[in-house]
Length: 254
Image 1 (cartoon, rainbow, N blue to C red):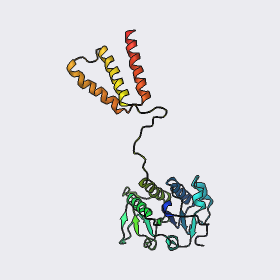
Image 2: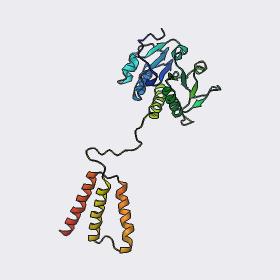
Image 3: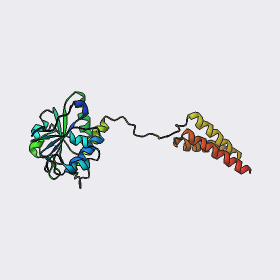
Image 4: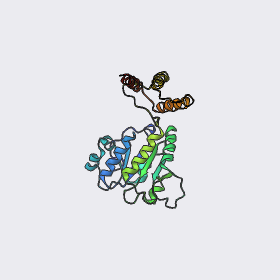
């Protein structure tokens, strides 16, 4: 029965193989496939799923990630499922008193990325929902992964665990900036545009007598400029502010 599904082309560049050992619920298998595809992982291997395979409930829970399930490979044993891999990381909530390296999910992702860059074939192994991987399964892994969570309640279901590891894998290779300004049809304002607005605003404030004393004016101007500089104004917003100042001045004259 090992590898009975048609084998797709699997290369190290595609990322880790996700191995689900003894998964119990089809819904969790489908949710795990969805989590994998969110992070660009497409290679799933199943070891003796409790409710058989294929599983209609898994397809329903995959929510668009059916291709991952369609290409999933079926195995009789964990040893067969990891046989062609050069490096295997296994998730566990307990160390089981084994002498093995234990890393966080984030560190595992970094190490897996480095292994893939060396053209190694790598895998992430997850155990059944109720009890996790057995000690015999864990002996087949090079490194164990634990996820630092609330020590009073750190229980994860299968799909949650797959999502955390898949997310860390994706983030380890993602270059998206931690913060950005969405400007839509406009663009960020230039320094020149901002300075022109400062001149317009300060002239209007001078005209209405806002700056009561000359010695305090420089500090008040700096406060006003810092306020608007922090706002990351767009070109459209600066033009809007010009219009507000203009209308206020004309309304005062009226």
